[in-house]
Image (cartoon, rainbow, N blue to C red):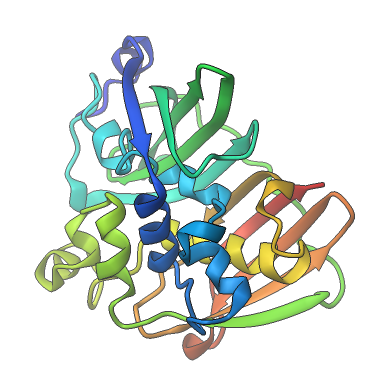
Length: 285
């Protein structure tokens, strides 16, 4: 078995330095669709350095996405074919607002390995902090198809109950044809999102959008629609990637709002509201 769960869990954490500045933040925001209309004051908060603030999901790419999903797959005990890898879920806890310029220390490790029978699930955890203390904790749940079945721990199976009633708000967000090509410049160069031949080898008709791009687009919609554009109100954000998005499609984002959290469901309009993000919760003040 290419995944040695015991070896992966016992491996020493890797530590490295992350640095970022306004250009990195602006590029990320453009990659998730910010800047339309270009002169809208609400959009200038994401694109103009003199007004810039940082959407918390930038944490998933800060420092060029290192350590990221791809680098986590090179940890001891893990040797897998990238074409069999799917990003299954993401959770992010924000300990304090992200600065527009920063240098921090990232410590990452494999926090769990689960046996789902037909797949293995790796939980890649990254803790990031600077001289003032913790900044964020990031968990990526990675499905590796064909690598389960060794009789290991199946992991948690409970999921949140679906939100009841009609959503409080629904918005639609277009995904540009070049969205994945722009987003990948923030650090995720997995060819699944750019190379048609690689995408077909992985079982897709054409390159798909990064799950974390959809993740960022969704959080921006919640912040702009329900939180008054105040990125500092976000405390945590988690989701399960329930399906793919193809560049050129439209996201339908439904939101059920409460004082301290917002439930979200995201679907692809052109494919009959095919699920994209599920079990999605943004906790906020």
